[in-house]
Amino acid sequence: MAFISGAGATNVDLLYQGMERIPDVGEELYCKDFSLQLGGGLPATLINLGRLGIETKIATELGNDIFSEFAKDKFTQNGVSPTNLYSGDKIPLNITSAIILPKDRTFFTYGKGTIEPDDNALETFYQIAKGSKICMMQIGGFKEVYKRLKDEGTVLVLDTGWDDELGFEKYDEYLTLADYYTPNRKEALKITNTTDEKEAAYALKKYFDKVVVKVDADGCIGIDGDEYFFSPSIDEFKNVDSTGAGDAFLSGFMYGLFYDYPLRDCIEFGNITGGKAVTAVGALSAWVSEKELIEYKQRYYK
View 1 (tube, rainbow, N blue to C red):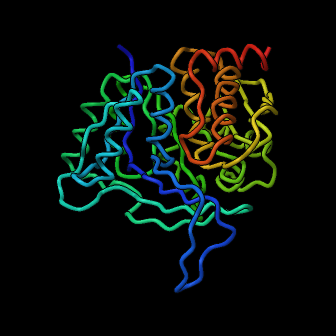
View 2 (cartoon, rainbow, N blue to C red):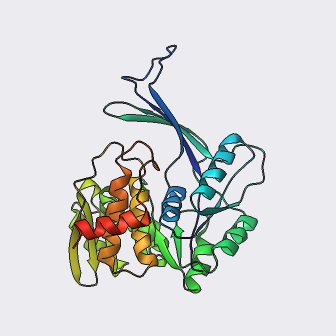
View 3 (cartoon, helix red, strand yellow):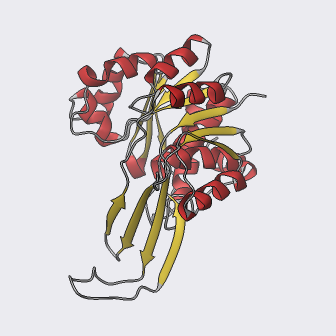
């Protein structure tokens, strides 16, 4: 059976809500709401794909701590099969405390951010990803595995995230290797050194026949061969918290790729999953089922 794979660090979010301000040093404030959730990033995308009924596999670092146990439970509850790459005795996850204020957010995080794989971790990831129809790419130490998978016919989808040094020269090897790249407006302008998102989209044609540029809350640009188009977002989805919106977009986009839809349809699926994600606080609080995804598409995208 076909599946989607990926390797990346697991993030856990402690979300504090219902405060008017951040406490000063020496102060204690009580918040009205609190939740413990898996955070954004590659794991969030795979969980959203699992919720859409697609078999997904993740190689990540998990320990024997309570946060790792929480993450394992959430993966399995949402159709994601986790494989552990960690053998130490510390907490190998990224743990973020997020204070959600009425008009802004602030964060502090424990962790190292990314996985630095050794040879055993690379082989472990390859063995679970071998045979996947799609593999999510991240910048980092798994490049040699991506190359092996690409040679075997796996479709590679790259999501870089922000980097102050984002540019074609630095990321040429990853862009050349990827089949799809899904930057947001800010990332697209930075990596192409342009000042307009449409110009950025055409600059990405250097690497991709099918181009995707997320234009934040407005929608998404697509270029499919010689066809340029813009797919607008859905007004029904009101923004409460944008955490995880890009990860959710990617899940809808890859749902379309997984079932061999044209690029425009893949982007429309991404607009739906990404739009729904912003309607509640947290990266994984709001989502659509496969049935709802199809219904939204039929309703809003003729």
